[in-house]
Amino acid sequence: MEYVVAAVILLVVLVAGAVGLMVPRMRRRELPPQAGGGTTTLERPTEDEIPPLVVPAEADEGLPPLIEEPPVLETERKPELDQPEPTAGRLVRLRARLARSQTVLGRGLLSVLSRDHLDEDAWEEIEDSLISADVGVEATQALVERLRERVRVLGTRTVAEVRAQLAEELTAALEPDMDRTLRTEPHEGRPAVVLVVGVNGAGKTTTCGKIGRVLIADGRSVLFGAADTFRAAAAEQLATWGERVGAETVRGPEGGDPASVAFDAVKRGIDTGIDTVLIDTAGRLQNKVGLMDELGKVKRVVEKHGPVDETLLILDATTGQNGLEQARVFTEVVDVTGVVLTKLDGTAKGGIVIAVQRKLGIPVKLVGLGEGPDDLAPFEPGAFVEALLGSDS
Image 1 (cartoon, rainbow, N blue to C red):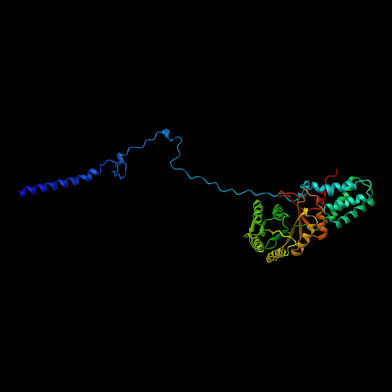
Image 2 (cartoon, rainbow, N blue to C red):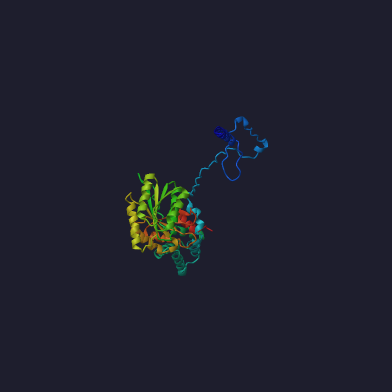
């Protein structure tokens, strides 16, 4: 009986071992698992078992390539720079801007002077016209006195003759022999420095940009110094003017020290070999002592690099005789060397040119005759008078 039990146990062990050897081989042929998870293990097929991939010829049509070429990036285009108009003859080309001034200083005077007889009322009318045009009382009296003497000596004349003599007197009153040259020639190892000053609202920053265009049109290289750090938009505005003509702008933090910005601008001009540095200062009222003292500081700091070549005062032609007081105070603080008259277009106040020069002995060097970027012209007395008087007819 014991032998039978042992034989059964041995038989069971042998069967279990055979089953254990067969199970792994069966697992390799399992079907993919049912949905719900798990991992499928498949034997790697041989190369002979992989069928070739057959793609119909028409399937290639209209399909993108399997490997796309990288897109070609266009290089950023540099903005085209403006080409400022040449300064020669600008005043002649812009004579139409003085059309309204002709009514007072031109046609009005001609119509009176061409009368057969000039009595005291006529001469008073001439005086009133000149004073209304901001020529100034003293300058008007001197001009009228010379005209009366010419009429007394020469008698009645044609309109053409009257016009020619009036043109001579007005040109003489503008002192054509004054030096109106802009001192913008660079020095040995450093640029020329032009300081631009004026009161608020005179168009100072815009005019500074236009002066830069005038210099560039004449072949100068220019750098702007945005020393007006108190007006938020001033530096941005000046930088825009510079970008249009390819000029660099040195600027500082808003509310920063204007003198420091001006100093850095001149230093940058020295380092880069620029011909002319234009420094735009903050607008100031001539009766604010503290602000005027600060303007004096700007000039003193800049002069550590060398003397300032030009200090241009921007005057609004429509301010009339008040502009004379502005010019006087600015001259005491920073020694103004020249005047730029703006907003002469559409105004009958062209006589302020005569008043400024007679009262202060400061030459008007540039005049603004419009809002266009090139509507700033070198002042030429003869051409200015011709524009005021209009045609001979």
